[in-house]
Image (cartoon, rainbow, N blue to C red; front, side, top):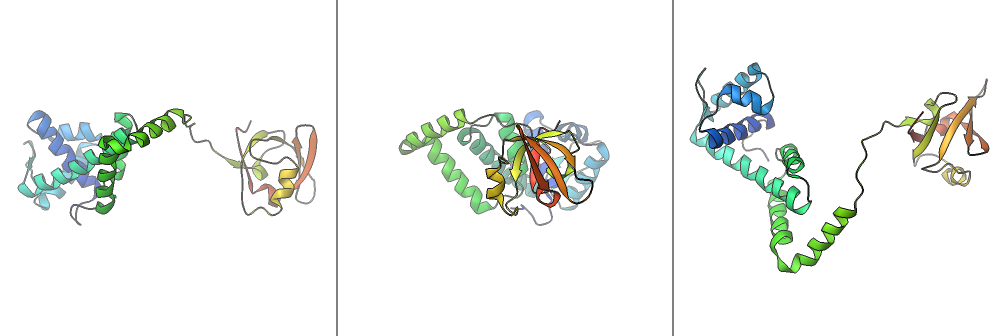
Length: 230
């Protein structure tokens, strides 16, 4: 939910950073903002001018940035929203502080205020309510047993495989007709296949699956996506 219809998510980040720097150091300079937000000085200058034009800060070149009363109020709302989200991600979803903080930064600009209020209630219940102790225990166990996620792999269509290349079936499109027939042939997720060749004429591919050879139309092969291509 926007603090102000005229404030973009980027400007909200600047307001939040200004308030954080003032709390930590007693001041907020342009150079400090550039370092904190990892942006270049011209971008900082443009953002500060935009905030000043909205009467949210007092900004003079080579002087510390000062929040106006309206700017301090807006920054307080933004920071509170970030803290609530960070607490949910860290205490309920058991993310590391770094991941919780980074995720909150991405979500905080667009979350609906009603959803945020309900997340706060949920967080309070799951972290402090005695009746939720069993749920907390079960969530902790489930999270602990979840496998680590692998980096996202690029998937390619079987139809785009080069001759003698192999790959593991990762996904078969639901639009593929006769999927049961292909499953009976062994073309299922997890199966490793190799493209032996293509027919000189027509649309047929020769696929090796274990010790079997399968002929497959290219139009059907387009629905089969592969990973670990080599």
